[in-house]
Length: 381
Ligand code: MG
Image 1 (cartoon, protein in one colour):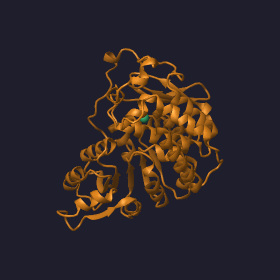
Image 2 (cartoon, rainbow, N blue to C red):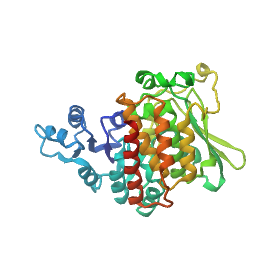
Image 3 (cartoon, rainbow, N blue to C red):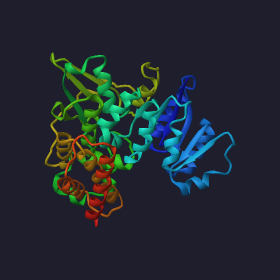
Image 4 (tube, protein in one colour):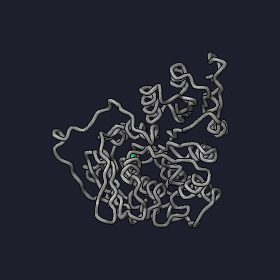
């Protein structure tokens, strides 16, 4: 029985994780849950899964949880509480389904406790990938990717050695604005941006998918997870979202991972690894699918992707700056303070003003992150 902590249990990935766990009561037990502030949902989840530990990140929301809980449930709150909770010796695997850089502190804590880590959060890895991977090796913490593309690369690599890899094809559905003329981007509505054609997701990642920044973050994520260079990762638009990424080896053989576009599939694999558990999720009907399409991404129309490649070649603190400037811009777009086209413009300006630090330590990364947040916030007005 694997004892699992689900961080960000009220979000899209968190809920899908709980639905996978619900299917396998013999294999998995929910040991801990955390939410940012959604107390109502947390209460329902506590009732169903009876975790021993829970954490509410928002201290005001945490105060509302107190009454009505059984005394056997231990309640943590705030970032410090989350950092402490993930260290608990009875937790085997921590699912990181928190969005944004807020995952970094708890992730460092879980790595240093040598936990298995199912990683759905990409921002922490983008900020501090080389450092996190180094620590994971040191503390023997397994990082199991949950993002569908990274899971596909992981599964396609199999037991092959990294030296045999020629290239990664990182596939992208193209997002909700793929067929919209660039001239209409300035006035595109929030509603349209949030309506993804293939995946149901949280708001931040939906905006990132529309700007293709999501693919840019995944480029960095893949480089750090699998120790690759930017020039070995090629983004490939594949609107059907059936192939979730491919690995081309030196002998010209390409391995791909295919499945329905359902996040429960990569989530389940990260939880059950190295086993595969039988499920009843939808499969692929090749007769109905009939065709699959591939095209080159339009870097002019989606400048966020070029900016991510630029950060991927520069490395150092630049990926953290790209990520922070993007997070602030996306927040401001969600609050309708800036338009869609301002997102790449602000990210580019902040990157241009940054003096990069090579081989950064954690304090360099955190300093670059806060600097970029302040810069981006000023530009949002
Ligand atoms: Mg993805």
